[in-house]
Length: 107
Image (cartoon, rainbow, N blue to C red):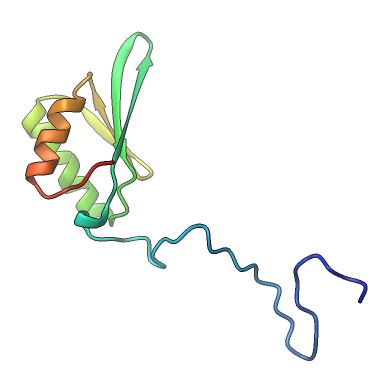
């Protein structure tokens, strides 16, 4: 056989899809909140602290609801970037307390 790179070219059916089993995410990208494993990232942008909480695999409405809850409880600004929620300030401990009370899990 000439080609050995990964595509199965035997017979009439040409299967060129790669079997990638490393990333086990749901097909639609939405999982329930008790199965999330959220992590924190802390950054300084222009000298100001920013706390990132994430990988929220939710639809946009649910992400906005979580952001609204956090902004209201913490009295700070925030935004959503991809699957991450960014909040102004170093508020990691407070975020963890609020979200654990709401049923979220952390690594």
